[in-house]
Image (cartoon, rainbow, N blue to C red; front, top):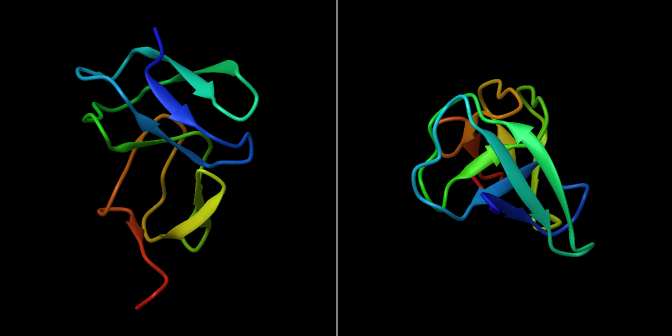
Length: 93
């Protein structure tokens, strides 16, 4: 089962595409640009459509989703954690 998707292997987050993702699961992610899968641990519950961190991210790091800069980290995010508006902010303002 595919739990999350990303486009580029350089992405720092993937988007959860199924309901019911819970802490403790091992997630399967599909890298769309390469048509291959990866696995990662899930350490927090993550709602459908939200992001999961693919690597540890520190305050000030750039977040890459689908090969595009979507903002900066404002609170540390560990691999497998929920990445959303509580720990990522846009760089626009």
